[in-house]
Length: 66
Image (tube, rainbow, N blue to C red):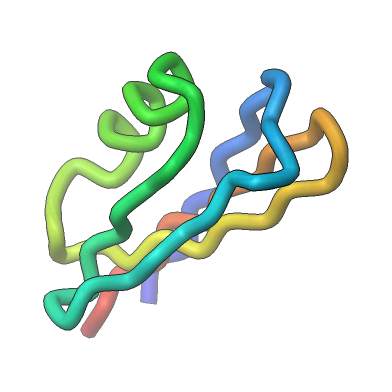
């Protein structure tokens, strides 16, 4: 299992949510600049993205689904 931690410091709204589709891809509701960085980090649907938000600290974990 590969676990890569991605740190982003941006203004994240409290209303931001992460929804997982049946394919395991994250449908992300964040400001566009964050969405762009997350898409670069995800690369493909082979990765499952776990997101944690604490104030302005945005943390995403990219974990391979094996």
